[in-house]
Image (cartoon, rainbow, N blue to C red; front, side, top):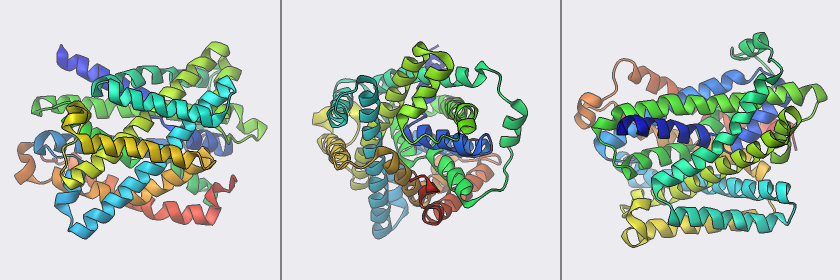
Length: 406
């Protein structure tokens, strides 16, 4: 019974916490611009996320090594340090964008100064990090994030164009702007901090080989359900905004769609869900900064060890949160920052994920839990897509001037 409860809670946490500001922005903009034509990119991103999460969780369970333990052991010192710097930079940019998103949501609903509400968001995140256990953080933000289910209801409310949706699940050609959003949506679905957090979380929660099935269920069910939420954002934007030739350039426009389709109750559910999803991603990003540096430097790490047991890890996490807040206070637009975070993450992914793919197939390390005839080709195919996204992302960003939205 305990194992089934762990699966259920893990799936709910993944469902409520899969979306962050990257998916909220990119998926809605893509739906407004291209209708259903980019839905296939969400499928690709989710499949790769499932594969990488399952691999990282399995390696953490068997080898007892999280992502940056593997980076440190797999590369020469100069390359592991470069990977660390890239990973920290991406996590910090992501953290800043997510923290700015919290301020935007509160400012939109309550109407006061945005900078003040960003500070309130920071205090909420720090308090949750210090006062709640690791599992409670996952569950609280995951449960509240379920408010975003209203977008699935909104997508189905008036009967979607199923034939057009089916066509959107098949890759097709388009302009450079179209491909910029395709790459962005794939990258947004597999941000590096998600894998850093997932692999470290398996060790935080002391998973053993008895939890291999739990790992598969959490990654194989939770991420696709989160992807369904992401697809619903694209569908709703295609239904509501594309006919009006409106492109959402703020989180306010995204959550307003729930109000227009289903009324005020759905609107507030969407607001709570968006706040929780972005808040959970903020904590994940801050934790991931601490995980990356502590694992690379062989420091004691982990929320479960407390401040006394892992002072450098806690210090790094809190410093990252403070630095992210300082970046937001420069008045940078969180939505613009989100786009840079997504593309920057694409560049950092190949070096971060390579050790996971390699070690997962090493029979000396993994024994009978090494990747088999199904997992092995899936891992290599996923890694190939990661590399393509890493090259295409910055090129398309330059050629399209960040999608020609600004």
